[in-house]
Image (tube, rainbow, N blue to C red; front, side, top):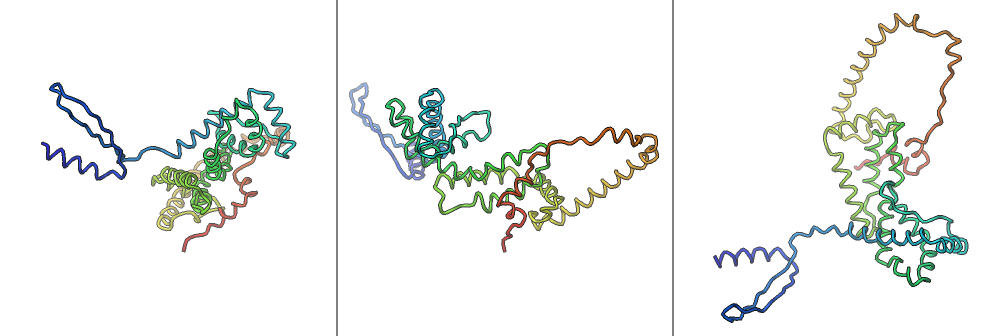
Length: 307
């Protein structure tokens, strides 16, 4: 038994790189002295360091923003320093669990007003501890660098009044090749955040049925057609599109035949049609109109394929 336990302990110790030990002296009932030795080591590192760093920084910022929200003196001083330092006259943004992107907006606003906030907090001994340190500032800049470019696409891709499914594959390609691509200027945190986001998106849409649906949506969009369809799946997608169009045409013709015979009895008079008038709705900004004004539109419509 001793030999077996010893070999098992030796095998487990080999998995560790760094070790810490604790020891204790004790005596038995017969007054015999003993010494125990315990070895501590980590064999599976499961701590989520990036998430922990971001949570700490966000917690500090929320306390700091709250200090301004409940103090009219600090608000007045902030407005004065904004004019004096020629900063944008913006109010601080509070993180809200029910508002999408409020954490990123809060971080960006704090970085924008950093000089004024620093002067106000450091002048008061009670609030001096609320000012973020260098580590928190590095975390904030890394978060903005990783998530800032993606923010503009969230609202556009969540539209309810227009079709956005055909944009999924082009946008994923844009993220992979440009926005989430590793950059020499990336910090360790921003680089890991980009990789995590990209892996999540890739895993989310890797299901074959989902991938085929996205290919079909991209194929029937005249702006993209076959630009983002894998060459191995192109023939299959085109055959499915032809089959579905033929089925749709058959159903449409069958539905129009009985409707043509009763069209004379159901048609309205010209006067009635004129009185109805068109119902005009205010045009809303769509994903297409958003990309027309974006420098990334060229990358979406003209992707660079790898040789």
